[in-house]
Amino acid sequence: MVDSKPLFELYSQKTFFFVIVLYWLSGVALYSDESKLNAKQSKVLKESFSYLETLEPKRIRIDKSTYNRLTQFESIFKFGFSGKKLSRWIQSRIKKYSYGSTGEYIAMYHDGDVLLGRAFFSLNRMDRILVLLHEARHADGKSYGHVVCPENFQFLNPRDWKIHPAGKKGCDDVPDGSYGITAAFIFELGAFGYLNQTEAAHRYNSEISRVIRD
Ligand SMILES: [Zn+2]
Image (cartoon, rainbow, N blue to C red; front, side, top):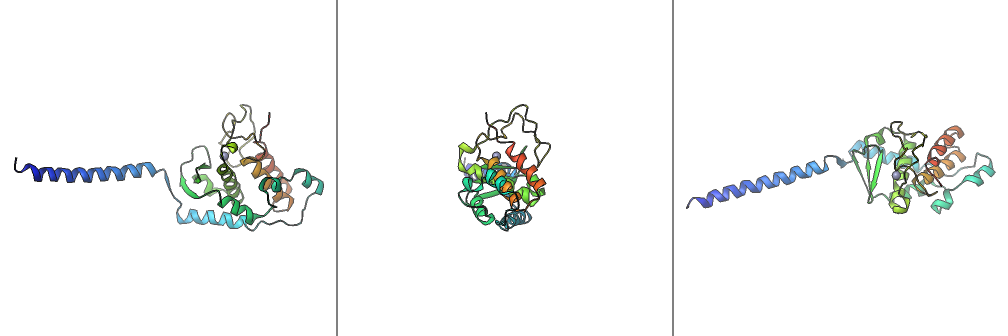
């Protein structure tokens, strides 16, 4: 079998090439669902943070006793309302963003990474900030994980009516989880006049509706 050696070599080269192709294909298959943000998506994300950083405390426009009764921002975040500080708060918790399929969610958090779905990029800048703030809270551990919403939960999802929270892990049983902190943020925006009272109240009520207590 004199000629077996070169044949074997040829075969092993082919096998090697085949394995490389398989490896490459498996990589493509594994990550085809998830990719780096493209330039346009990165710009949208950057603009969301720039907008957040313009939101600083102003004169309180609402009844002072209502403010004192319901403000939670400082007790939750341990700093007074500040878009710049909040932007840093979020960025210290989310290390990487990717784009991909998020199923019934707008975004998903996993181990320092946030996966943003298509819907995220069609939201307005205020809703994008709320989503980022929500996801950033998940970086603080399991105690901020969601609990199942009651089967008779009838509130709408303000960002996507097709998403029905009833019977799904879309509620919190702690006051300072993802929904509690977005509510606290919205409350300040209403108090300082960044949102009108009607919009602030609707948005606040919607977030706080996800905080369920037995
Ligand atoms: Zn969440």
